[in-house]
Image (cartoon, rainbow, N blue to C red; front, top):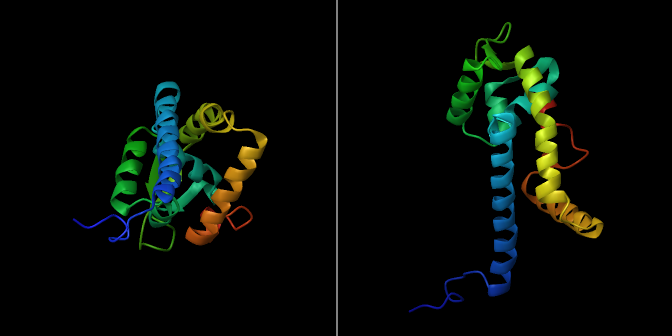
Length: 167
């Protein structure tokens, strides 16, 4: 039998770091999901779509762009926008003068709903992620997150142009 070290597996310390980070994030997102469903009637992923549309110029984004900034597959965004459209929160339009794709557009009802859900999301983030941390731990978590983003997705760093604003 080959040892973990021989196959290039993570050391116990490396595994502990990754598991703590990964399991904490999974537990936090599970709580956020449950809170959003219970109090706002929206899955967190749908809230994310609506929030990004709310912040986008003219409350609209190309479907391909929406998939990119939410790190979703096109088929998943198509399904989610279809559900949001059925609820009257989003509508799809062909961009003026450009028939290559579709725009997802936040409706007035979608705007009302996302603004109603935003305090629920904020309270959940505070309760499950921010409040348990000291000021120093928050600073450390921020530094860790920004270090990882600089390597994985520099455009997502604070101060970088919003992904929603790029064409």
